[in-house]
Image 1 (spheres, rainbow, N blue to C red):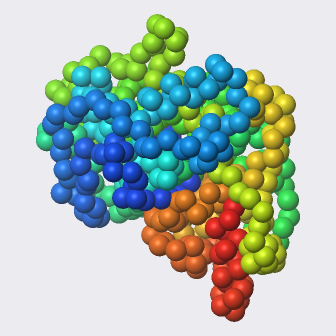
Image 2: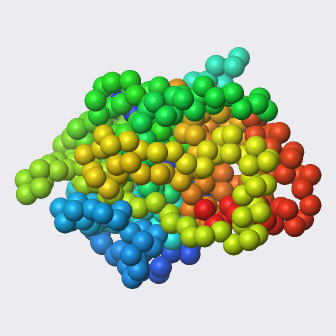
Length: 431
C-alpha cells in the first residue's frame, strides 16, 4: 500500500493490498506467518513490535493439477515459467532488517497478506489509513506519516500511531492478485469505452488517470482499491516501500515514522535504495515479484450448474453487470504470448464509481473519498471476507452494504425471494 499523496507514492495494498478479500487463518500451517498480529482500534493502537527477524521461505503446499488456483498461466515459455518460479520465491520470502526491512512496515513478506487459498491470494489482514476532513477537503496528513499507518517497526522508537488530528480512519483488506497480467493487458481504449456507456440507474463510472511511477507518464489506473496504480511493476514497487519499508529505484526515499525525520535517521541504518539488482538475472526483487504477479493465472471456472445459470440471469436483471462487466478482451500488444487476445472474465469495468457510504473516506490518486474501483468478482469463492475493509462475512452481506451507484441494484436484490437470492449467490460463487 501507499502513503497517499507523497511525492513518490500512491497505491493500496498489495502486500497487506487492492481489490477485497480470504482467510490467512485458513492458510496451510507451514505458510510464512507475520512477525506479529496487531490489534486494531481507531485511536492509537497497542501494536506488537518485532526486533529480530529471520529469513525464511516456506511456500504453501503446491497444487498438483494444472490450472488450479495459484498456478502460472498456461502457454508460458520455459523462461517465463522460470521467471514465475523465481518471482514466487521472492514473494514468499521474509525480508530482514539487515536487508532493509522497515524501520516501519506492515508485514515482512508479500505472502503474509496474500496467502489464501494459495500464494497470491487474499487474506483477513487489514491495513489502516487515516486523514483529516475539513469542510469537505481531505488532507492525507503526509507530514504526520499519512495516509497509511505502518503498524510494525524494527524498534519501539519508530512505532507509528494514528495522529490525534485525524478524523477519518479506514481499514483496507488485502486483495487477491490472480490474473493481474491479464488485467494489465486489457487495452486502455476498452476501459475508456466502458466509461462512455450509458447504462441507467444513475451509474456512471469514471476512468482513473494516474501518473505511472515506472514511466512517469499519465496512464489509466487499474490496480488497487482506488485504481491508484497503472502497472504491475509500479504496484509492486509501491508495496515494497509502503508495506515492507524496502526502498527501490521507483520509491528511493524511506518513510519517516509519523513524518519524524530525526527518528528515521536514528533507526534506518541500511543505505537506500535497498532493493538492488541481482547480477545473475539483471532484476531486482521488485522486478521478480512483478513477474510472478504478471504470470499468475486467473481463477478458473467450469460449466454453470442449473441454479448458477439461473443466478446469472438474475445478476444481469438486477443491473449488477452494469459495473461488474463479465469480461473484456486483451489485444495482441503484450510481449507475452499467453496474454494476447484472451478473454478476461474478471467481472469488473475497472472504473471508479461513487459508492456513497460504502466509500472508505480516503481520497487517493484520482479517486475521491467516496469513489472505489469496481472490485473484480472472479474467484469470489476464494476471497472471504468481502468489501474493501473485510466487513462483510458473506456475499449477501456485501451486496446489502452497497450504496451510492450500487443502491438500486441492492434494493432490487432485497426484493428477491429466498430461492432467487440463493441462485444469485450460487452464480457468484461459481465465477
